Length: 78
Image (cartoon, rainbow, N blue to C red; front, side, top):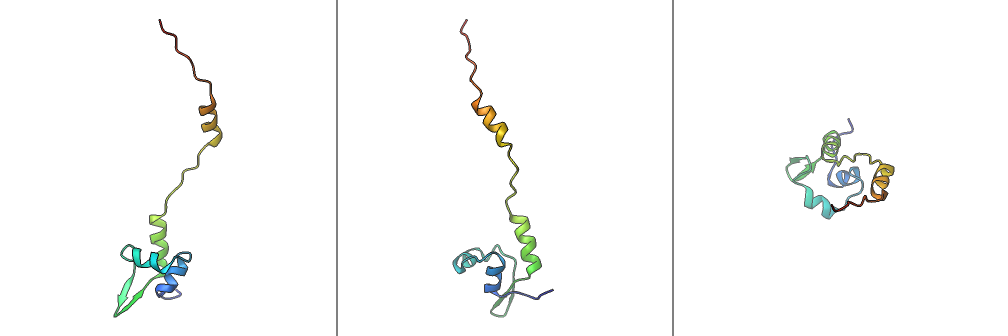
């Protein structure tokens, strides 16, 4: 355990986010308040990032292109 991070440490841990971003999202980010200090547990931050991260499903690009590029079938009016 490396201990708790301060506000700037949390921003660095999350990839160098700006202070404005941190202040805007502080209610969402797991933290503890000790007197006038905010403390961030790296393990909780990692779990929060994992839980809130967008999951991207791999797309079959060749299949999509083939479906789009197929010639349209012309319907015949009877």
